[in-house]
Image (cartoon, rainbow, N blue to C red; front, side, top):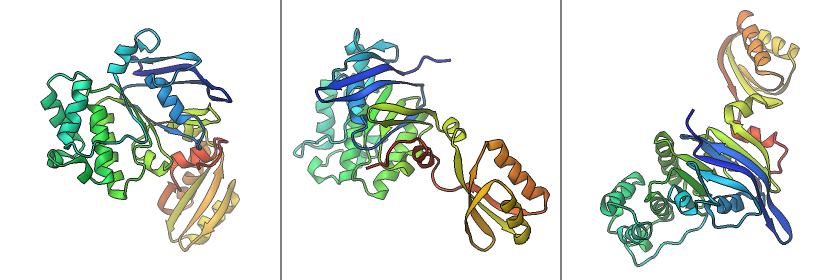
Length: 308
């Protein structure tokens, strides 16, 4: 097994009047994209700032690609990219000049080539000579992401990167993140839009009041859900299908024509058995799927408060 790219152990951050992060531990491997979820004030941004070395923490440890923040801060920061929820651009610079400024600050080798690569990755090549002030909000977000990618970090911390983006901007951002995942980066990303995260996250970390409520792969967390909402559609045999559903341990929420939406409480194996029973009893199943987003359902059953 490869060494985790990000390891956080028992992280605690104290402010004068509140414990902002309390005993948080998690690991991310190459190719992991983890959604950091929680209400406002849960400690998400503080966690990212602590990992990046921008926020002093009370105790705990942070390692990036095997380098400890406490003893090797410079080595760690070379392998880490942090994109805050608001990062201004310099209006009177072109996009290339903006990236050149940061490439020099990061001491990036082969600066010209790396700038071109990052502009291409974030679909800004045709804006290389445009002033920052001429860019749309989505383009500015992609430019800041390009700046974050200049040193080719192994771990990325993205705090609300889709904030203020229109639907097209969010689609473009999702494509970029999928490329980073496929390149073997580890990404910790926060967002209030859970359906947005589900398109590329394979892990989830749910926070409330500074504590980690749940952490793991979305597949494993889905298996642990006490209830799940399902949609079933069939061809013909409506009476037989409804008879089987009503005799099963489900709560029927809605019926519409040749189908129903129901809530199921039980193990995945029992849900599989229900589907098997329908098929064996001659019901021709046209659709069998979970309703709503897995990540959204995981959050709602985690015990954390609603997203605010």
